[in-house]
Length: 518
Image (cartoon, rainbow, N blue to C red):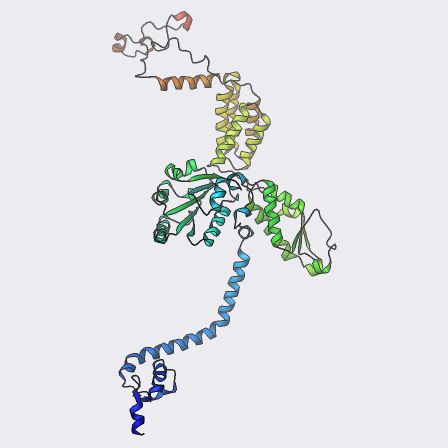
């Protein structure tokens, strides 16, 4: 090698080999990553190589093993992913698929958050207030939360977190609050949706108070129970209660038709039609009659989730049994729907709001002498699973409160009804309860004793100072000392007008609780 060549050459700091100046940079890059043929000729005594060779060799071996394992497992992983996607697609219930994503997609509840309401205007402006959604199952509480969730996804300044009180605890709420405080530093508001919030006890509900008050989180709670009984007053004062009623028959019918519009292989017919009325290129898989949908909307008791679940189950059953190519489309008639669902889901909570509503309606119907309404309400309570002994005890109360002395035998019969229910139980005792309710509704009514009792109670509560003592002549005198003190002096067994005695405390002789007490 000439002297000029040696002068222009530079030694590689990795392998110590000499290269020309214009080639040294390219060689060093290759040598560092061990990707060129020069690797075999590099010197093992290089300080840089001694420091990094073992780590690089281990990495190369690990990468090669991983790649070989991935090539071996690729078919299995691909199949698993495909199966998982298939399961996820098939396992999503129809009710979940139909969740609305905008306010205009929500069916019903026009008075609560329909167009023109304050809540509708606030949500349109991306302002979410603290609120408690109170309503029966399947009325759309979670659907409204789903709309808020999509609003948060479209906004950069809002994030949505969903929890269920059936599975989450205090620690989960604390973690969300911790993250919410960090997000607040970047001006991002956290919306926390707590489903079944009434399952948190009063102590657990206190966890929300400081964070809702200072704005760290915006709380949306969903409950099927009366918030007045199941939630803290302090929490209620910080949230607006949105009352959501059952969906009407027309609302449920509209939801069912939306579900069918998603699947183009299902059509709705006004009545049963023959399977041969369609061309070969446009044969649907399922034909469902309008009469079937109407009956399903009427029997689901305003619960859209039950209606959609029954529809999905019936269609799936007919779909698996029918070969469209050979037999034509499957026709779902009213009988098919009726076989798949019965009215076994009637809303009735033996310890909740509906429990008190039904028994109140029964009491007021008997008081008004409406035997037909009394029959309806007591039958509805029994159909919902109400305790027959509870109803019998309430009938005894009604016999005293509203019938009273106008027909004293009503109380005797009500007590006999309770004893009969205790002896024979359900379902045989249902006729006893119904007969007693109708008998009380038809009886003569007198609230004289009840109203006098209430007036007396009110008088005693409003008395200022100590209550007046019992007159001496009305006191019992079992001992000699009591007789010496005047206990029982002058007492006789004559009637009030003949005895010459007063039986009210001193100063209250002219008080009569039976006057003007209606």
